[in-house]
Image (cartoon, rainbow, N blue to C red; front, top):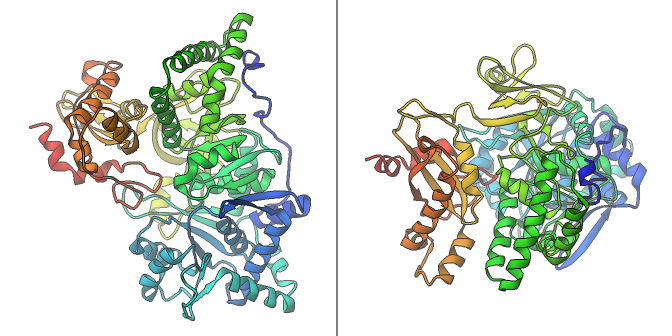
Length: 621
């Protein structure tokens, strides 16, 4: 850690063990935080080009009125309300109102199709459904006939719906008005609901992405949520001076716990992006001091810098090359625990002035004290690149069932390629028989809704959660993920291959978004590759490669050669038996609505292999 002082600002990354806000349920923590913080700003959201601030007091007023409206509609403790919307302030308001009523809050991805909405509402026994706008309302109306328990649909944004007259649909504003009226005659009802909520009660449902079948509803209690949120501050501390960017789906455990609830506990300001497409612009406006994202976001930022660099002047390229070299030299010394001399420190200051500070501003991380990455594996080289810029990147590992992070990288001893030691609030160990990573602690979920047999498979009698991840632990107690138990490839020659290592190296390319390596019981390895459309299109334009659409772009020989060169680069780092011999490019531009992708934009390995079986077989013909 001493080697970092004066180079990287790590002063605010130290774990905090102090109790910040009392309370043993999510609503009690929220209302206690309101009492403590009052007129301080908690949330900001950009509307019509202007950032609107929400103080804790204003948030509380909206939550109180929505909760009052729900009670007026007969919403009872223990009932489930689902939220079908993008990451917006209203999502948080609805969530906290449902929990304050003693209800169960469930999130639905806004990219889910109507059939998926039906399944999730039916499985969770949803009685009230919040939707963002007319697009999401259409899905609800399409399936409501098959949802006899659904009593009311609440719409956040009524734009385009002013002429709608449906007794089962009402606006959020109308619900708030109903709540104000209801609370006038039932002043104590909400307080009774809040105090009646107990730590052991079911609080939220988080449905898994369903990569191996239908989504399963992971049940989390108030006790588990509050315990974990307090535990997060023992990994990396934040406070009311911090600015966060809220942009990942709130129905995903990462943003729900690490964004909404962690900020609620610590007082950090939540800044909501305009929409998923404006993240690069919004991050430069917000300049978050604490920034959590998935590897795909960090890869996109890196790709944008590499593409911009190709268009820079020779002098600018030379300045960057020298500067990143200095940063890399320091990063390597710090990672090795070696001292950084005064001469190198002086060079780093010059490197920041010449190029590195500009790169950080281009991305929007110039105020970031640290970056957090999780939800999927990340290339160690990418971690080192951000370190070379002068910003520590801390990898965390966890899953829906562990309430998010179960391990975390300490800022004082970063090991790229590792997920860090076990978090202080849970136990993590390696099963000696299978190599599977096991987790035990209060943060482990209650089980899967309506699936007792799946719960029994996941949690053994001793309370250990079987994560499905295979890993190893080094002499310092740092864990490393080697693969998913079901994803390890054993070639026809008997060689065990970890596909995720190859896939992570491929995704480090600015031209590759994702890849699936094939080879189980096959004579050699092959790959299915999804290109980065924006960067590959830029390459094609710069090199006069003709194309008319996405499919023709992937079929262009120059693009095929480009990806082959990227694969060759990766192959050079692996033994011959671990090298990719053939590949093909997905010819369809995929989005989160497509079945091949999870809502977090990861290719579904089994589905992709099954869907493209003929093309895979052709690579082995």
